Length: 215
Image (cartoon, rainbow, N blue to C red):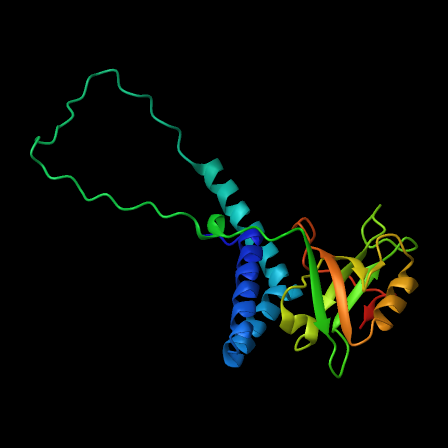
Protein backbone atom coordinates (compact mmCIF):
# COMPACT_ATOMS: atom_id res chain seq x y z
CA UNK A 1 0.00 0.00 0.00
CA UNK A 2 1.54 3.37 -1.01
CA UNK A 3 2.68 5.62 1.83
CA UNK A 4 1.64 9.27 1.44
CA UNK A 5 2.90 12.39 3.19
CA UNK A 6 -0.48 12.80 4.86
CA UNK A 7 -0.16 9.32 6.38
CA UNK A 8 3.35 10.15 7.62
CA UNK A 9 2.13 13.35 9.28
CA UNK A 10 -0.67 11.43 10.97
CA UNK A 11 1.82 8.85 12.18
CA UNK A 12 3.98 11.68 13.55
CA UNK A 13 0.99 13.06 15.49
CA UNK A 14 0.32 9.61 16.97
CA UNK A 15 3.96 9.20 18.02
CA UNK A 16 3.98 12.65 19.64
CA UNK A 17 0.79 11.79 21.53
CA UNK A 18 2.28 8.48 22.71
CA UNK A 19 5.46 10.26 23.79
CA UNK A 20 3.48 12.73 25.91
CA UNK A 21 1.67 9.84 27.58
CA UNK A 22 4.86 7.89 28.24
CA UNK A 23 6.59 10.99 29.63
CA UNK A 24 3.61 11.62 31.90
CA UNK A 25 3.89 8.14 33.45
CA UNK A 26 7.68 8.36 33.71
CA UNK A 27 8.55 5.63 31.19
CA UNK A 28 11.96 6.99 30.16
CA UNK A 29 12.92 4.04 27.94
CA UNK A 30 9.74 4.25 25.85
CA UNK A 31 9.98 8.05 25.69
CA UNK A 32 13.54 7.85 24.37
CA UNK A 33 12.54 5.29 21.72
CA UNK A 34 9.63 7.45 20.58
CA UNK A 35 11.94 10.49 20.45
CA UNK A 36 14.24 8.67 18.02
CA UNK A 37 11.30 7.70 15.80
CA UNK A 38 9.95 11.27 15.79
CA UNK A 39 13.34 12.73 14.89
CA UNK A 40 13.60 10.25 12.01
CA UNK A 41 10.16 11.20 10.64
CA UNK A 42 11.03 14.89 10.86
CA UNK A 43 14.30 14.48 8.94
CA UNK A 44 14.80 15.94 5.47
CA UNK A 45 15.93 12.51 4.21
CA UNK A 46 12.62 10.87 5.17
CA UNK A 47 10.60 13.62 3.47
CA UNK A 48 12.75 13.30 0.35
CA UNK A 49 12.18 9.52 0.30
CA UNK A 50 8.42 10.12 0.50
CA UNK A 51 8.62 12.45 -2.51
CA UNK A 52 10.52 9.83 -4.52
CA UNK A 53 8.05 7.11 -3.47
CA UNK A 54 4.99 9.16 -4.45
CA UNK A 55 6.56 10.01 -7.82
CA UNK A 56 7.34 6.34 -8.46
CA UNK A 57 3.80 5.21 -7.56
CA UNK A 58 2.17 7.90 -9.72
CA UNK A 59 4.40 6.93 -12.66
CA UNK A 60 3.47 3.24 -12.33
CA UNK A 61 -0.25 4.07 -12.11
CA UNK A 62 -0.06 6.29 -15.20
CA UNK A 63 1.77 3.57 -17.15
CA UNK A 64 -0.74 0.91 -16.09
CA UNK A 65 -3.75 3.00 -17.12
CA UNK A 66 -2.25 3.61 -20.58
CA UNK A 67 -1.53 -0.09 -21.21
CA UNK A 68 -4.83 -1.43 -19.90
CA UNK A 69 -6.78 -3.49 -22.51
CA UNK A 70 -10.08 -2.02 -23.76
CA UNK A 71 -13.21 -3.22 -22.05
CA UNK A 72 -15.25 -5.81 -23.97
CA UNK A 73 -18.84 -4.84 -24.76
CA UNK A 74 -21.39 -6.49 -22.54
CA UNK A 75 -23.15 -9.47 -24.08
CA UNK A 76 -26.83 -8.97 -24.90
CA UNK A 77 -27.56 -12.66 -24.39
CA UNK A 78 -29.06 -13.57 -21.02
CA UNK A 79 -26.82 -15.60 -18.77
CA UNK A 80 -27.86 -18.12 -16.20
CA UNK A 81 -26.95 -16.99 -12.71
CA UNK A 82 -26.89 -19.80 -10.16
CA UNK A 83 -28.86 -19.02 -7.04
CA UNK A 84 -27.88 -20.24 -3.62
CA UNK A 85 -30.29 -22.53 -1.75
CA UNK A 86 -32.46 -20.79 0.77
CA UNK A 87 -31.04 -22.84 3.63
CA UNK A 88 -27.41 -21.99 2.83
CA UNK A 89 -25.85 -20.41 5.93
CA UNK A 90 -24.60 -16.90 5.37
CA UNK A 91 -21.12 -15.79 6.30
CA UNK A 92 -20.86 -14.10 9.70
CA UNK A 93 -20.94 -10.34 9.52
CA UNK A 94 -17.79 -8.62 10.76
CA UNK A 95 -18.16 -5.54 12.88
CA UNK A 96 -17.23 -2.36 11.09
CA UNK A 97 -14.33 -0.61 12.80
CA UNK A 98 -13.97 3.13 12.76
CA UNK A 99 -10.73 4.59 11.53
CA UNK A 100 -8.36 5.30 14.42
CA UNK A 101 -7.66 8.86 13.38
CA UNK A 102 -11.35 9.81 13.04
CA UNK A 103 -11.81 8.88 16.72
CA UNK A 104 -9.05 11.13 17.95
CA UNK A 105 -10.14 14.33 19.61
CA UNK A 106 -9.05 17.33 17.51
CA UNK A 107 -6.26 19.28 19.12
CA UNK A 108 -7.02 22.91 19.95
CA UNK A 109 -5.75 25.40 17.37
CA UNK A 110 -4.47 27.71 20.15
CA UNK A 111 -2.78 26.37 23.31
CA UNK A 112 -1.01 27.91 26.30
CA UNK A 113 2.23 26.04 27.05
CA UNK A 114 4.38 26.59 30.15
CA UNK A 115 7.99 25.36 30.06
CA UNK A 116 10.80 25.44 32.63
CA UNK A 117 14.20 26.12 31.05
CA UNK A 118 16.17 24.38 33.77
CA UNK A 119 19.91 24.67 33.16
CA UNK A 120 19.74 25.52 29.46
CA UNK A 121 17.54 27.09 26.82
CA UNK A 122 14.26 25.90 25.38
CA UNK A 123 15.90 24.17 22.42
CA UNK A 124 13.94 25.69 19.58
CA UNK A 125 14.65 27.93 16.59
CA UNK A 126 12.37 30.68 15.28
CA UNK A 127 12.03 32.73 12.12
CA UNK A 128 9.79 35.49 10.83
CA UNK A 129 8.72 38.98 11.89
CA UNK A 130 7.33 42.04 10.16
CA UNK A 131 10.81 42.87 8.83
CA UNK A 132 11.55 39.37 7.49
CA UNK A 133 8.37 37.27 6.98
CA UNK A 134 9.01 33.53 7.13
CA UNK A 135 5.79 32.96 5.15
CA UNK A 136 4.90 35.38 2.36
CA UNK A 137 2.48 38.00 3.61
CA UNK A 138 2.53 36.75 7.23
CA UNK A 139 4.43 38.75 9.89
CA UNK A 140 4.20 36.06 12.59
CA UNK A 141 7.00 34.29 14.48
CA UNK A 142 7.20 30.57 13.65
CA UNK A 143 9.05 27.58 15.10
CA UNK A 144 11.40 26.25 12.43
CA UNK A 145 13.46 23.73 14.38
CA UNK A 146 13.22 21.76 17.63
CA UNK A 147 16.52 20.39 18.86
CA UNK A 148 16.57 16.80 20.18
CA UNK A 149 16.81 16.07 23.91
CA UNK A 150 15.84 19.64 24.88
CA UNK A 151 13.02 21.06 27.00
CA UNK A 152 10.88 21.86 23.95
CA UNK A 153 11.44 18.46 22.34
CA UNK A 154 10.87 16.39 25.48
CA UNK A 155 7.68 18.29 26.37
CA UNK A 156 6.25 17.19 23.02
CA UNK A 157 3.58 19.85 22.57
CA UNK A 158 5.48 22.24 20.29
CA UNK A 159 5.66 21.32 16.60
CA UNK A 160 7.41 22.65 13.53
CA UNK A 161 5.34 25.35 11.88
CA UNK A 162 3.65 26.45 15.12
CA UNK A 163 3.23 30.21 15.50
CA UNK A 164 4.26 31.85 18.80
CA UNK A 165 1.53 34.38 19.56
CA UNK A 166 2.98 35.64 22.86
CA UNK A 167 5.67 34.98 25.49
CA UNK A 168 4.96 35.80 29.13
CA UNK A 169 2.16 38.13 28.06
CA UNK A 170 4.23 39.95 25.40
CA UNK A 171 2.59 39.73 21.96
CA UNK A 172 4.76 38.50 19.07
CA UNK A 173 2.08 38.71 16.39
CA UNK A 174 3.43 41.88 14.72
CA UNK A 175 7.01 42.51 15.88
CA UNK A 176 10.41 42.62 14.20
CA UNK A 177 12.57 39.52 14.42
CA UNK A 178 15.03 41.05 16.91
CA UNK A 179 12.18 41.89 19.29
CA UNK A 180 11.02 38.25 19.28
CA UNK A 181 14.57 37.06 20.00
CA UNK A 182 14.96 39.50 22.92
CA UNK A 183 11.57 38.55 24.35
CA UNK A 184 12.52 34.87 24.46
CA UNK A 185 15.96 35.59 25.94
CA UNK A 186 14.49 37.77 28.71
CA UNK A 187 11.64 35.36 29.51
CA UNK A 188 13.38 33.90 32.56
CA UNK A 189 13.34 30.28 33.72
CA UNK A 190 9.55 29.89 33.53
CA UNK A 191 8.27 30.59 30.00
CA UNK A 192 4.55 30.86 29.25
CA UNK A 193 3.83 30.77 25.53
CA UNK A 194 0.54 31.06 23.67
CA UNK A 195 0.92 28.83 20.61
CA UNK A 196 -1.16 28.60 17.45
CA UNK A 197 -0.57 25.11 16.13
CA UNK A 198 0.21 24.54 12.48
CA UNK A 199 -2.81 23.38 10.44
CA UNK A 200 -0.63 21.03 8.33
CA UNK A 201 -0.45 23.26 5.24
CA UNK A 202 3.25 23.88 5.76
CA UNK A 203 5.98 21.34 5.14
CA UNK A 204 7.71 19.94 8.27
CA UNK A 205 11.04 20.89 6.66
CA UNK A 206 11.98 24.58 6.94
CA UNK A 207 14.94 26.47 5.53
CA UNK A 208 16.94 28.14 8.29
CA UNK A 209 18.70 31.47 7.71
CA UNK A 210 21.13 33.63 9.66
CA UNK A 211 18.26 35.36 11.48
CA UNK A 212 17.04 32.10 13.02
CA UNK A 213 17.29 31.84 16.82
CA UNK A 214 18.61 28.77 18.65
CA UNK A 215 17.16 29.42 22.11
